Length: 220
Image 1 (cartoon, rainbow, N blue to C red):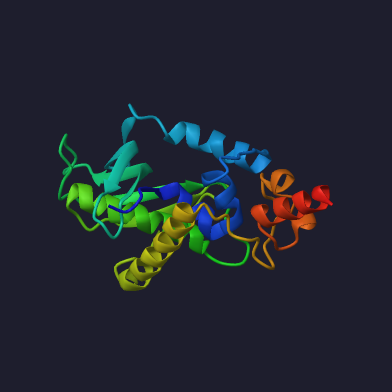
Image 2: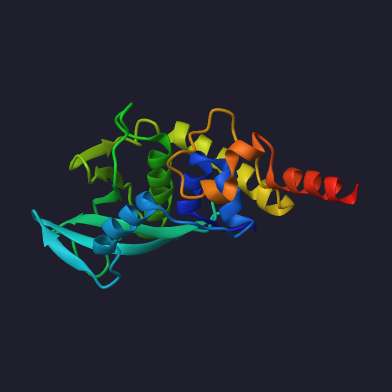
């Protein structure tokens, strides 16, 4: 069986493979104002006992989901699932479900970030598997109070192929204990890990390579 992958780590990997490696392999972590802002926003959503009715829909918050098929083997927690009120019950399998993921800030360049879309697509793979449905998906951006619908039904094959490619890369790195090098052109200024990562010092070398160079200098 393939190594289990947390859905949230896919977004980390797409944003910066090096950052993902520091988190998943080195078990490093650091927070900044952007992480704190996102955490505060999610406090309202991530309540496992929380469910409420809004605009004729039943909303279930902090729903754990998974897909243990060999090609995926994913798990995670959705921000919220919206179910038509007349379909809402203890068992929502087969219902019309919309996944809503909350994000603090909207991209200035495009309608949504690809790493956000891929994270929600991975959620869809799990939601559809658990609840036997063909779920819809949306991103809610807190700063603009805009809700962006994502049409995965027309682009399913594209996202599915890319998701499997990413999972394969991530598992290979996990098996080998490899922290990917910093990608050229990576935007590091807003990253909570930049003081641990030290991108200006490392340039585009990985952590292991930097340590080896230091050891070689010390041995001389």
